[in-house]
View (tube, rainbow, N blue to C red):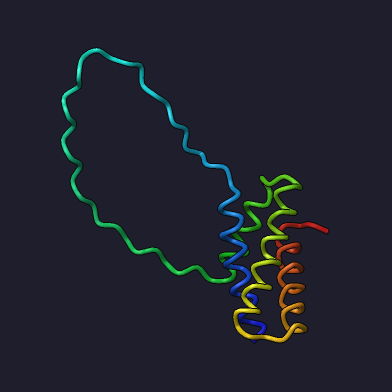
Length: 118
């Protein structure tokens, strides 16, 4: 049962960290022109490969890689988010208050270990 929580926690943590990460895409507005450009031809459809499922080990590796670029505040926010998500998941599963606390504690420990927070 703890294994399921650790995997769920890793996934939740990954999503929390991914949402906090900075986007490398920058938008630039082109200068205004008086002439209307000709419409570009539609790109040919390409085959999109389905996303591969992420294992718990892959999730933890990704979290550790992202942790290197996070500030202390972002890491603390990720810890709080992971703890809250674990508590909510345990409550939704109908667990007792002790089990909810244990799940939250385990989530907090796992994310702190992954982020290198003391």
